[in-house]
Length: 327
Ligand code: FRU
Image 1 (cartoon, rainbow, N blue to C red):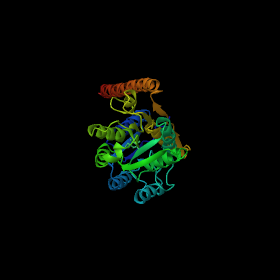
Image 2: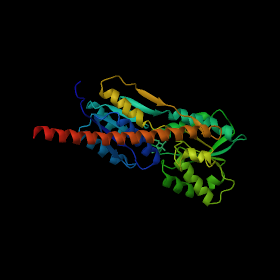
Image 3: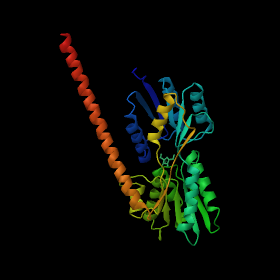
Image 4: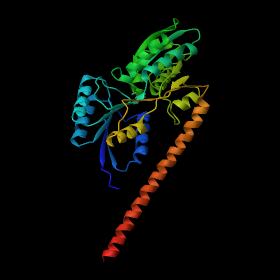
């Protein structure tokens, strides 16, 4: 068989600084172990569209064969930059966040509009007598925040006794959420439920409420449902969050789809990943499954390392043998 050509995949990440995106990168790396002829060039834009623009250019200069990107915003400049890459003939895979043009091969991610709707439909089941909801937005110029908000409004439109009493802008970030919560304590004191576009912000606002002695505390609902000791699943387990909605990273799928495209096979325009509502009723089963999955993933990572070591040993022995034979 002929040797496979080596491919360079550029990955432009809007931010690498939170747990969800660390999980995404790990998911990618695990999958990449199956494709030794792929090399990943990773760039972290640290929440800055300007930085991401520069990094896209840099990746193109480094001659990537395909671009995977989570665009920080749906903004016209970022859309234009991605258009340009696509028009150069470099395939583009959008991951989790969208742009406003069609210049991409595949989009991979959960359906944020649908998740927003599920949240909107869950709220009346949590506030049986109706009440006031404060919405904590992710970055308002990013597609998941826009779609989660739109879905929420659609979801609660079927009820009359739920009122959105405040909208605060936490930009997906723990610290920003903290600042806006501190500046809007009066709205939070009146709230029956806080819905944040991600778990990180929900927990951050909750802490502010606790520190300020808000009593009774409103209910807290988030999105992501990550495993790990401080993340969503554990918070549902200990009752801190009332509900969260699974938001899969798509890291593995992104590499799979990249592999298909690079092999010249047809890729679907959209890969929609499933979400699910997580609360007291199903957390035990989900936590057990997620712990098992984590364990298996760790085993795979160990195996990959072991294979790497064996390959190194084999290569050095082969060299040694070559030296002996040619001496
Ligand atoms: C991580 C994150 C997630 C959220 C997603 C939306 O950076 O903020 O918490 O679900 O991005 O793009």
